[in-house]
Amino acid sequence: MKRLPHFTAICLVLLFAVGCSSQSEAENGEESQNNGNSEQEANGDSYLPEITDDDRKPLLLIGIDGVKPSYLEEGFASTPNLDRLIDDGVVAESLKPVFPSLTFPNLYSIVTGLYPGSHGIVGNTVYDPSRGMTLNMRDQEAQTDPEWWGGEPIWVSAEQQGLTAATFFWVGSEAEIGGVKPTHYISYNSRVPHSARTDQVASWLTDDDPVDFASLYFASPDGAGHEHGAGAPEVVEALEAVDHQIGRLISQLENRGVWPDINILVVSDHGMTDLDEEKVIFLDDIIDLSDVDVVEWSPVAMINPKPGKVSDVYNALKEHEDEEHYSVYRREDLPERFHLSNHPRVADIVVIADKPYSLASQFFFSQQGLFSGGHGFDPEYPEMHGVFLAHGPDLPNGVEIETVELVDIYSLMAHLLNLEPAEHDGSLERIGTQIFAE
Ligand SMILES: [Zn+2]
Image 1 (cartoon, protein in one colour):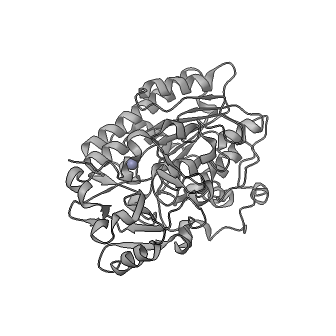
Image 2 (tube, helix red, strand yellow):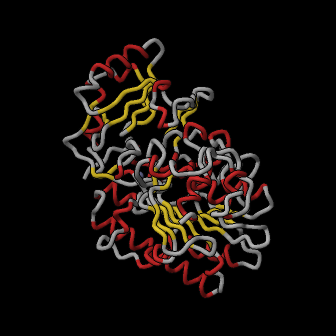
């Protein structure tokens, strides 16, 4: 199978992802008794567990890239450790990612509770017109430059309020955001064995002075899904390997006597769908690529036309919208549900392919072909959804809930850590009623 290196799918190769999954938003929120995102209001609701500074439990956030709910169904893979968390904890039907359903935007939305249009990581590659710079997520320097990272990640909230945080990989954790880094963090390196990650995290959680918050990230099975397709045997193998490591981690926590005291969230950044080499939209058949800079390609193309070319490029793309399988928008006209149109890092023109179409140029496709699997599409597609599991002393036992909104996770984490949350786009009330109001 050939691949197309400029495809956004590349996200996974080096970086992170977060889960997502899900169904309609209406299912989640419409029953709520409260009417806003007010944490104070939600904190007053008796369905939420009361957490004080004296009985706060450590929180472990585990991100597994590119896992969708069907991967956890019986018969797909042998995942006894994830099954254990599900049986004794909370599992959502799915986790609905933010748009675009790519790794970097979603991983960073998980820890900030902000949509990409608020935190500024609007893709895996981002062009900032005010700086005249492109942020390539595979670029280590970008990881440490605080200018790129908006909002307040949970580890910053924790450190600023007197807690200790540690990250064994999470996007944004290498930058000094708001002047703060996690007490312990590891610079991203995909070659670090999974066992070294779990061993270190177990150590952080069981030291004489244990951390209050830790993150752990696995880049697989996303890569296997891209390479071999969404349900391929290689995906099964990759997921089983991650499950094995989670089992090792649980054993270490059990052996040191702290397992009953730790709250764990397991999330993915997005799902995965099979792509089709017969379903490719060639942008150079529609526009002159010399008239534009294409920041990201597929399945969401971020296109900045050269000066004076915006209308020509937009009109050409619009003219072919009906016969091709995409939607085209000027930034300011993006649908409200994407929560993306206000950020200047969003390109002037955004082309969004219908699933399972890919956007490419003739040259790159002839040279590289396509990945077998991909993501990045509209979060309304269930295949783009990830997973959400929660387990621990402050969480209910054996509860199945409907689709969780990815932006709500930050508020849940802040509550479990008894932190005053920063401004965010999620709703503690929405996720809290889902989990605790049964
Ligand atoms: Zn990916």
